[in-house]
Structure formats: structure tokens, C-alpha cells
Length: 490
Image (cartoon, rainbow, N blue to C red; front, side):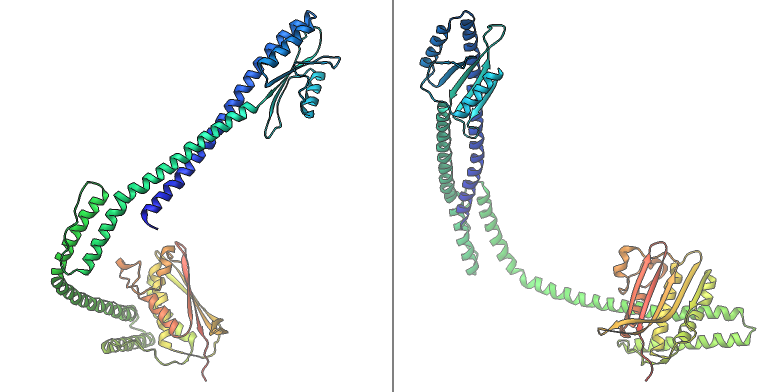
């Protein structure tokens, strides 16, 4: 559907809605005004007749009442007046007019009760306005009521004329407006748009700049033509600069590739710093302990053994990085998990005591040997404990719990090793939880954090087929729960 038809139909619908609401409101207002006028005129007539009839009855001249009613019949054919007296005699100017039975009953009841009654009959589509007024006892000693029934046919006829006039005006205006909108839209919108479309088609098929479109007037379409002429000129000018920009783009791509290499080198450096930093921290702590306990041969040998293990570990890390190959998981071997975790706790014991942190280690008396990578499980515990120590300020506690549990693996529930590390540190903010295991994400960048500790934990646990869950409350501490499938040696 073209724009002109859409605009014409939209204007038609809007006019129909607006004038429909206005016409309905106008008819309702006109009906209310006519009713108010009829009611006011009927009340005025009834009170005037009431005074005259009371005077005539007080002077005992009923023939004057009959004459008055006949005059009303001649002057106002649409009004019927009756007088209800105690002897049920009805004096009226139109004895042949038959009122509806419901109206007769209502007027008779009002005469007996000497009540003022005013109502429309029927209530939904009234044909009559009924008004009954009792005689004033002070004016006449004879009780009774004056009943005035007015026909509403003239009022209905006036309303029908008003409705017809509104409908004719309404449809005439809508038809004229829609036709005018269609003609003007075709002249000022449809034709210029068609010319602009033809120019676009010619521009797409041409290899040379097309002739500029004529620009007349100062409306939006003239502005669009002017912008189209400017656009075609700029596009053909841009084609000439395309080769130079392509060359610049190639240079930019080479620069981005070099930058990507630098980023990779930076990530490799960060990984190297993290992988070697943890063993060096242990070496530093044990060297300090060795300096203080140099007189105890047993302690010296134990610390020296730890130093040898950590230097061997650094050697393996450096060898893998020099090979520039992905880290390969070491082969699993039977391992005493209780002892492997205890060795890590013992390595970090000096640093924990220096910070005023107490570490507790809960585990069963014995656990079956587990087929697992010992270096991997120790790396997991070392990273978790290092993070816990970094999160504790001004003393606190770390709890390590080792037990047997279960894990869902390949849709089957199997036995698993459960490792829990809890601390009373600062905890982790809720907005940081989704990024907790992402590489290089850290909240301790100013304190030397690399953001690789928990990423390494996640990688190692995933390689072993396990799961890791973090529970934390900001300002209260954190807890990490790790489940690893229990694989006994064959």
C-alpha cells in the first residue's frame, strides 16, 4: 500500500473517531438541553394552572376550571391536563385521550397520597413527561391533584433533525478532507518520491555521476533531493579514495596483529609470574624459617626437602613455558590425599603464623589411596590457601576440611573427594561472583594479584572431571567447595 493511501485511510479513521465522539457528545448534550427546557416549561405551566384552578375551586366555580382546560387544549395540543378530586371525578379538556394504564395508576396514587410526582414514561425511550401537583390546603379546602401529561413527540422530532444534520455534516467533512488529502498527497508527496526513486535506480546502474535532481521549494522533500545530490557527489568522490583507504586498512591490520602478539606475550608473562610466584613465596617463607631454626638439624633437613621440591616445581614450569606448548596434565598416580594436603598446609604455616592466621585441618583418620595428579591437587590447595591468606586482614582463621562425598558424573552419582576451604576474610562482592573464575580478573591488582589463581583452580578441577562452587558473604568470609571423582587405583 502506498504512502498516500496509508495517509488517506489514517486521516479517514482519525476523523471518523474524533467526529464520532464529538457527534455523540453533541447529540447527548442536545437531548439533555431539550429535556431540561421541556421540564422547566412543564413545571411553569403546571404551577400557573394550579394557582388558577385553586382560585376557581375556592370560589366554587368548576365551570371556570373546565373552560380553562379547554383553552389549554386549544393552545397546547401536546399537553393534556386533568384534575383529580376526592369524588374521583376527572375534569379534563380532552376526555377522548387515553393515557397508558401505568400513568393512570401512578397519578391516581399520587392524588390519594397528595404527593408531588414527576417521571418519564416509558423510562428507556420516553413518550410522555408526567407531572402531578397537589392543591395547596391554604388556598382551597377541597383536596385534590393537578396532573399534566406532555407529549415528547416534538422533542424527538427536533432530536432527529439534529442527528440528521450532524451526520450529514460529519460525512461531508470526512469525504471532502479525505479527497483533498489524496489529491494533495499525490501532488506533493507521491510524485516527488517517485522521481527520487527513479533517480536512485539510475544511480545504482550508472558508472558515472547522474544529473542532479531539480530542487524547488523549502520543504522536507526538497531537502531530501538536495541531500541526495550531495550524497551522490560524495559517493563518487569516495570511490576515488577507496584504494588509499584499503592500503591504510591493511597497515592497520598488521598493526593490530602486532598488538595481539604483544597482548599474548603479556598474558604469557602474567602466567609465568603466577606459576612461579607461588613456589617462590613458599621458598621465601621456608628460607626465613631456616634462618631462624638453623641449629636444629631435623628441621633444617625438612625445610631443605621442601626447598628442593619447590625448585623442582619451578624447573618444570619453566620447561613447559620454554616449550611454548599448552600445559599437559601429569599422569595420575596413587596418592595419599591427606598427606598431600598436609604438605601444602605445612608449607604455608610460617606465612600464616606471621600474619596471625590460624589454620585448622579436619580429615578422617584414614582415606583410601586416590588415583589423582598429586601436583594438581596441591596446586589447587595452594591457590585456595594463598587467596584466603590475602583476603584476611588483621588476623583470622582458615579451615580446611577433607572428606568423602558424592558427585553427579555422566548422569550417574559416584563417590567423590570433597575438599572445603573456608576463611574469615573480607569476602567477595556480589557483582564480582560471575567473573570469579575468569582469567586475569582480580580485585587485588594494586596488591600484586594476577587474577590467575582461581582460574587455574577451575582449569585443574575441570580436567579432573570435578566441580568447584564458591560461597561468600561480603565482609564475613568465603568458602570454596571442590568435588573430585574418586578413582581408586586399579
